[in-house]
Each structure stands twice: as structure tokens, then as C-alpha cells.
Image 1 (cartoon, rainbow, N blue to C red):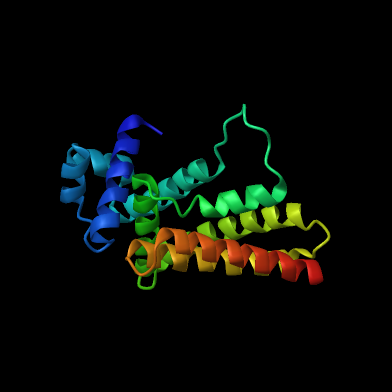
Image 2: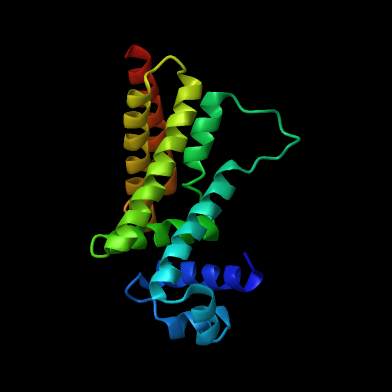
Length: 193
């Protein structure tokens, strides 16, 4: 992806996080990104193209900040990797706040936008599959359907906790504690299954 495209997508994520999808105007996005509206249309064709590419951008960014590890650090156990991957979605950084807010705004808008709904469904499915694979590394003898159900519960809870934290309903430490408890409960349930 070109640096201009990345610059525009970073700006789109910021605007969506602050103003929501309905508040995303191409003119405002151009001003935020420091580019012309013509350049936005050149790279993304239309507003829907911006939204679709922004969803992909925030997914890629989340993948990066939840999986990048220092190669000099000792490898994590499967349980530690599962917990770290999920808890890194609850860190008080500008990037995570922006990503989580934009994700929530895109999800809310998908209720009324069929194209966005399909893109979000695919992105959510990929996320659930990734978490199910991590669960499977911890509990390798568990059927795939049980892993997928547990992953779906964990990702849904994480989204809810993230929104409550971002909106001031709970403190981040409490959100992380609740997530750890849910991971423990899901792994215990899978172990009994």
C-alpha cells in the first residue's frame, strides 16, 4: 500500500473513531489527511471504498499490535499467547483506542449498510477463527465446533468490554480482569467437554 493510501486510512480511522461513520465526509477526511479530495477518490473510488479499506486497515493494525513480539524474548506458552493476544486489545494507547472506537462505529453502521455488514461479518469470522486456533493450541483435543463457540464468546465479550472501557463505564484494569476470568472459564469448560 502506498504511503498516501496509508496516510488517508490512518486519517479515516481517526475521523471514524471521533465522529462515527455517518460523520465521515470526504472533504473532512481530505483535510485530516492533508490531501485533496481527488486523491481520495483516486485511491478509493468512493466513500464506500474508504470505509471498506479502513475496516481492513484497522484489522491489519490490530493484528500487528496483538501479535508482534520481540524475537529475543522467550516464546510464550499457548495459554500465555492466547491471553496476551486478547488482552492487547485492552491497552490504553492511542492506536488501540482509535482502532477499537473505529471498529465499534463500523459495527454499529453495518446494521444499516449491507456491504459493510458483509465485510464486518468476514472480518469477525477471521478473528473468531484466529482465537479458536489459539484455544486449540491450549486444548488440542477439543472439537473444532467447541473451540469456535468459545472463541465467539470471548471475542464478543472483548468487544463489549472494550466499548464499556472506552465509554468510561468500567476501568481498563477491571476490563482486563474480567477478560482473564472469561478466558479461565472458557478453558475450564473446554477441558471438561
